[in-house]
Image (cartoon, rainbow, N blue to C red; front, side):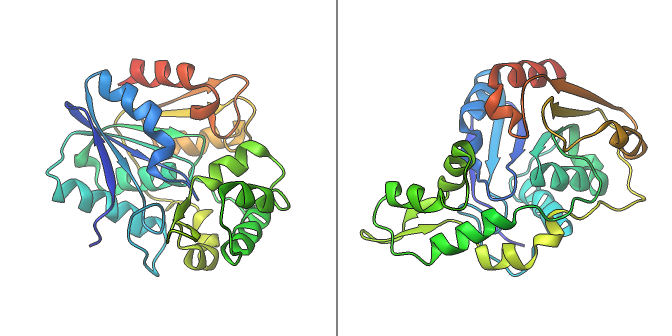
Length: 254
């Protein structure tokens, strides 16, 4: 068992939020505060090998799902709302299938249970190169990463992982070595036999191709009481691009 780092906001029914691949709990702080104000006890988790949580050689959805169960047991959390984005969404799906008694409602953001081929090559190359630089300012880091990652929004998301390891040296809050070694696991399909019968909401960005029309039968097969809501004009980071629409949809559901 590992001790996941978490930021806890507010009081009320436990509401756990899981970030995506190469993200961290801070990505969800704005929405976390809003859900806390709405009367929930929000737990923003750093998943293993991300953020301030422990670095381990194991990285797959089985251990990520177990981490969620362990966290709930160690903090005596029951009847939780569980939300996950992208990689966090897959971890949340599997946790729901394995530990249904823990969960009241499930929210999955822009990901389906299917297999996804690795598609982060350029980003991983850029982060690896960045990690090997002697960077003394965040501006230097952004300028360097721009050689590999052209989209400014994606760069800013990735650079949230930077922190001052010493007074002079910047480093990344990622176990980059293990994440590169286990990149196939991030896209792995979830087990064919698992099912979850409680209320489940899938949220898709209208401009994202992570959930397609062809995925809907697979989602219905695994999640017997599910619905899919589409937020128009939003990509994969739908919660960041359309924060108010996202918040309103989730609040109505929970």
